[in-house]
Amino acid sequence: GNIWTIYANDTTGAIGQSSISFSINTIPPAITFVNQTNSRGEFVNNTNPLVEGEGMIVYALANSKNLDKVFLIVWKTIEGGVQLLRVFFTQVEGILYRAIIPTNHTWDFNYNYTIYANDTLGRVSSFSSNFSFVKINISVFVEPETSGTPTNITLFGNVNFSNGSVFGN
Image (tube, rainbow, N blue to C red):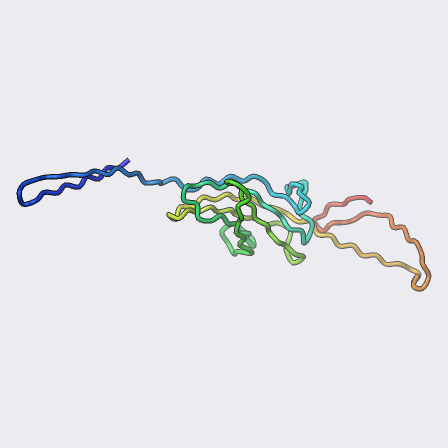
C-alpha cells in the first residue's frame, strides 16, 4: 500500500498532520472461457462444427472490481486483422456472460475470435479461440416429371459437405 501524509503548520508554530493509506489496483480483469454451443445447445468443436447459417453462443466468466465491458471480435482471417463482427456480452448471472454470434450463408469455413474484458481503468484481458462451419448443398432432380400426379419418391445416397466429409443417409 501507499501512505500519504500531509503536514501543516500555522504562524504560531502549531504543527498538525494527517495520513491516508491507499492502494492501486493494477490487476486486469480475469476472463475465463467456459464453452461455445450451437443454437441446439451442443458444444461446437472440431468434431461438431456449426452448420452453415447457424448461430453460435459463447459463454465466458469475467471478473473485476471495475469491470466495464466484455466483448468478442470475430476476425475475417488472422487474429488482430480485419474485423468481421464485434459482439458485446450480456451478463447472465454473477460473473457469467453470454454472447450470440449470428452467422449466415456468406460466412466461410473457419474463423478466429478474441474475447476481451476491460475495466474502467483501461486494463484489458483477452482469450482467443476459433470455430468452423460445415456447408450443405443438396440438389435433387426427379425424372420423369411427376407434376400433376401424387408420387412417393425415396432417395438414397450420401450428403457431401463442402469441407470434404461424407455422411451416409
